[in-house]
Amino acid sequence: MRIIITGGAGFIGSHIADAYVAAGHEVLVLDSLWEHGGGRRVNIPQRASFVHMDVRDENLARIFSEFKPEVVSHHAAQHSVAISSRDPELDAQVNVLGLLNVLKNAAKVGARKVIYASSGATFGNPERFPIGDDTPQRPTSPYGISKMVGEHYLRFFEAERGLAYTALRYGNVYGPRQDPNGEAGVISIFIGKFLRRESVRIDWDGEQTRDYVYVGDVVDANVAALDRGDGGAFVIGTGIKTSVNAIYRTLVEISGFEAPIVAGERRPGDARDAQFDAAGARKHLHWKPATKLADGMRQTYDYFATLKV
Image (cartoon, rainbow, N blue to C red; front, side):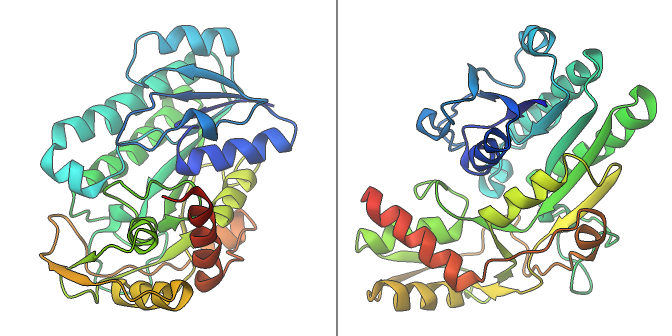
């Protein structure tokens, strides 16, 4: 199968690229290598082709025309809630206009399907938990808004252009290759601080929760979505909510270092809690998470320890 992975040099996208290449697919990675996006050339599989390009670039049409993908895995994004709150115009340019450029060209060359990296941030602060596929989407950040808008465009292109899609609404994904110096991904950020024996900042009261899902499990959902889940938007999470304070305590146990804590204010756009019921993904993608949080955090810690971040 011929597959384009936008954002394929990034944290999640590169792991997906590894899996698709290992399965024998012909993969083209397209990534802007934006400094805040986490894309790194070293992450790209050797057997994948690479194009250094922003998804907003008009030359995207030429790449799609030449490669003629059957499937597009769209993981290129402005993924930081904090950046989206400071610069909602940038967020919309990348996450909405960039997506439209991808969808337009995918439909034009006759691609069969788009797999779309959506987000649990589209739900905002729901009235009840756990969050399911049918929970009303009321995003509290520009990032969540742009990801929700993207889902509506997917439905439009399916209805009007015959382009199938599967949207995956990720919980908080963590694991190797996540940028420990970025503004998103508390586990990798904390690990970087712990390894450098620095203080960590805990915003709000630290009791805000997220549903942390290991990147390897997210990859499995993306492999399943190649052939399943057409027309669906599925939450991808573990069903377990974990506080920032609990993440901190687990890292103290793993590292043997009690990092000093600096208290911070609530970040604009941050939701209070998140917990997902992935029943739809279990039914339609035949997917379920396999990695316990403590095990995934230890694997992630060991990975970064070898890099000496």
